[in-house]
Image (cartoon, rainbow, N blue to C red; front, side, top):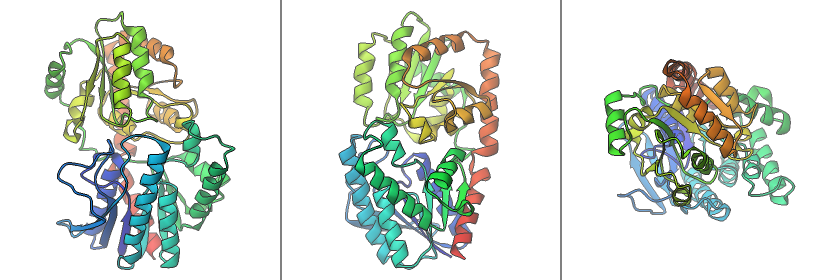
Length: 413
């Protein structure tokens, strides 16, 4: 079987979709299939080209396992603005589309790329070359744009994007969604044949996170965080949609707790804004760790007493943050800022790993942190272990990867 995987992210980038793409490609290659990756030059999560890389129109390489990689030029978007994100989407769609058009004919195309324009270009090419296409839906667009307040639901562009997304989804031989609510949207609102819909959540390698108390204590020492201090940690992309500002604002209401610290680990388009906001809160115990290397994940998350996962506005209804999986595997309790009934809130309830409060409510967040900080250590430990057990059973490569491989192999028949 020949498979063409198209995605703007691929290792060495540390984001979850990059790692899952790599695992899919490696597993297919190990089974003797021919795999070609069409991707961008590495720049995530900060939107800046990685050191040691130089952008060309196209650059080809072959990994030791035989996986062929075609890196394509795209406009980078270090700032999370609609205009720059559109140009990033469109430019990768055009160059990635050209690469897909002239690549050796595949038996199936797996698309895990930017919605909607890059996906639309690839869809047209799949139709022209009569190649079955499988798409992976990580965020529901254009609903995600509306939830971020970038455009109103009545906007003509939003209606056009929804029509495009519907046509693409209906025309693909399989649609992989990451949650039950996404499945409902594509079944009831997009009209996709239920037989073509597959719910496969994002996943991480269960061996990628292994909290170590000595390493985590050493990390605390580096930032002068006392051993017995209560440390809240946010680890992930510090972007516009992440809602990290709400966590920072909540610590304005917690300045009286001298033993309470907040660490924000990561980088992204809103990092400078968050640093400035932290200075205005007048709380010296708000700290930043940036850049955050992939090999530091276990150490940083393991140093926390509480991991915080914010969302903004209606965002929790249109996406499921992949960082929740890493949080759970770290074995620490989680405080999520999400709307009731959202996939994020449902996952938290199923796992029993923590607490959920409404997004964009710093006072409520502060009140919940006070409550959690006073809990018995055994209760926090119980919730952390519950989340870890849930993730190991449902959100790892062992649980999810075989299902994706089966979908691709069936589509190629």
